[in-house]
Length: 466
Image 1: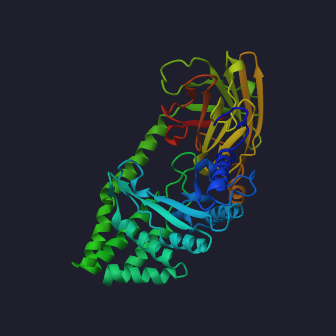
Image 2: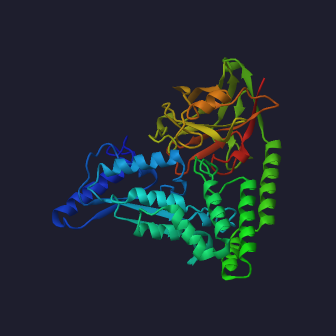
Image 3: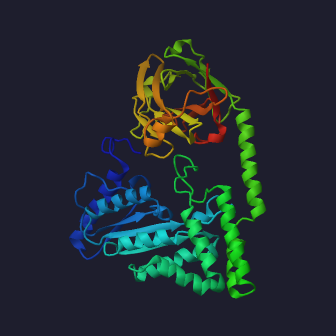
């Protein structure tokens, strides 16, 4: 993000929507009957608090809000609060929805292991938007100009189109009609399969790094049961047009034997990687001067020495994990401290415990600002952070509180869930550094090298305590 004086300290939402509002107000002077649209997306998906009311001709596209997850109560509450905030700032009716339903082309040609069917979620969203939205736009899974999975995506599109015409319909009645029309004698079993597929989406998945999830990342048992329902329906439909339609759905899925082999291969690869992981030992007590100092490696070229040295020490003290990270820096005056933390000089700590997977992370800059997640952003470590700058170095000392299973379950959004790491129950972790200063390409260092970014848990090292 730009760090000039005009932009410094302002969020992406403030910058993007401030610009959109200024443009809209200028256009409104000469063309008051024309609308300006802007997408609420990624880092500027939320309405800024700094603008009370937008120009009356500005429309907001609330984009990619995770429509398949709308049946999850937590996700829905977060989404609808966002809609209502936008509604309070734009002129009546100046809300649009945009949803890119491209889940079936994630992974650059990877097979579809589990379908992201979400007719009930689509119906819920459209029913709630009735009367406050100008319209709905959606992109489907395409590859090379061709529809990737027309059979699997058909039911969601059918429900979406029906609810755009009449949002007051009963979703079960619409699904009953759909299954009867398209699957004939297998209607009941197909409705069961469709409902099962949607209700078992991985609502809480965070497997894609930085907390991004894949609704299709379901357990193998769930995946196999869905396929069993499809097989039952195909047998019931027999050699009819209904049976051919069900066969089309099955053909768009990854073959079952390949699915099982892929799952086992991933599990075995993780076991092998963890067996070779570098090990760090945390001492008992808060005096980390007695702990081993581990030197970070060049993350992209592990056999080469980093241009500057970075070390860390670790300890366990009174239900907390401690780190002391020292970053040598001959160019201290050039330190780049960014508001978002990760765009400038920073260190990162990543922790996977027996009670929490995939991982937690804390990114900390030289001023002590922290960006953190579990890996989603709705979590706070409540860590104590102390930073220091000296001649030729900067330093981060952090104390991260750790709680047991019961306390973590009652309050999953705060602190690390775990227990003291041991040889029998180790943690998996990484410590990294981004050396930005004035470099065109920042230097990356890591305890356990990934040869890519940080959010690669299968490349984590092992952490045990004395």
